[in-house]
Length: 551
Image (cartoon, rainbow, N blue to C red; front, side):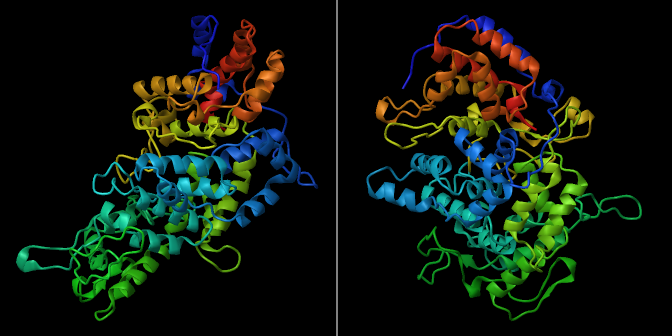
């Protein structure tokens, strides 16, 4: 793998690159190509349309994958992906541990990278990652960070339900022991007023606020419902939290030991109900649901999850978040409503069908229409960490060993994020975050900007430079060093325009502006060495607004 330094006037090149560093300028710099976005009768589409589609539907795609989608079209690719078997993470982890790898978080991350890079079910892997930023657990919590196997078990749960039903996902998430510890409803006991003990309310609050209905009543298009005085209407009250907290009592580890408090810890099976620790008596939940006394604890939980799942907010609330994670930060109310309608009824009378929802998100006209120069409310900032992932996938990163020992121990500092490592249950960024300046003044949101600061802007750019020019890890063993494969690009290096055209498709979906193109050409044409020419072109584009902002 190449490890040499570039031999070129780096200061001059970086000064040129400084013209490219403001993501807010991406819209102004981008060209408006000829109209496109519709399939021909043979379903074939333009390569740039395929590249843009895959930037929404996967965590990254290479040249061959882009052209395959261009050949078969959106629908055939989606159907093929929906039929792919699930590439689970935990079994790979278990096998590696059996063969001698350490049972720790580094091995967990190696497995995540292996599956993200090589699994056939790339759409499912993309959806599971999006769900992991909505139904959040995190190893930043000291109560759970020593359970790498359980984290992959939880991630596999997200993979399992990515094309399933949201009701089933919500129930299984509620019963996963990792979530039970993370949000403190595992071993949550019934009330004992004589001892001043009342059910923990943490999970009851978050399952409503973050996982299902949100804080305020919504119209079908995601806009706020208002009362007669123009005030948003709360979805629940403190009393509602208290009542729901009673439901999530009596859950403990799935152990044969009858001891609720000290039974054997089982992190891989759903929590079981210990009836004697479950809150007895009636519960009064939102929307007037009455849970009568005498029900089993699990019946209370099933009824409570059904109550939340059938709330009219869930469609617009969850679909907006999925659209934000996959397509655009500011979906129009019409876009949200179209997808929310599919959530409410997939056309066959089924509510919560995530397969139908994902297809609706990715094929909606607002997602597929080609971006225009003045659409400042379209697109999203590419997640900082996912720039690292996308480059790896676009350029077929590999190690001679065929493995991906990428531990990313400093990724939270370098990129501001890392999978399953957010600082709180609110994820790394809030869905309604507005960075100060032009975006806030336009009353738009840009969640990913919340992890973009003076530190991560520089550190992530430096890390991407290392990734482009050298290797993605520092193993000290060539056999395990992961590096990008630029062999195809080096073959084009003598023709700088052909090289930039190729990179435009691979990295910016054919949206590179004339100005950015010229800056890169000017820098590349000063360099003689083919490998250095490629490194400079890729790096300059990697720090450009067109790469940072997915349109």
